[in-house]
Image (cartoon, rainbow, N blue to C red):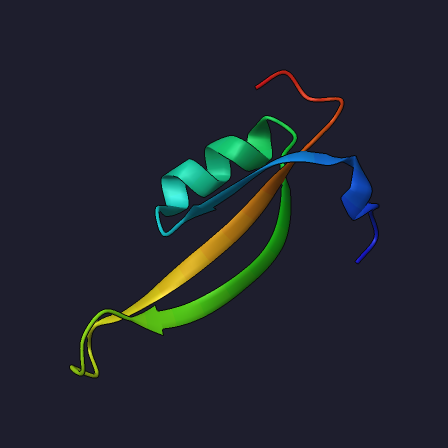
Length: 59
């Protein structure tokens, strides 16, 4: 990871890729991603994104 996590002042977790792109455009940093399922169905897999707002961003 190439940035200091202590400068992160807010965390957001989402599965919405449009929302992820909006946050990234506003200077947020992608911290991590993971896959999860909401049931035992194998096609129920969702990608989750964890983003952090650095101290020096507007939103």
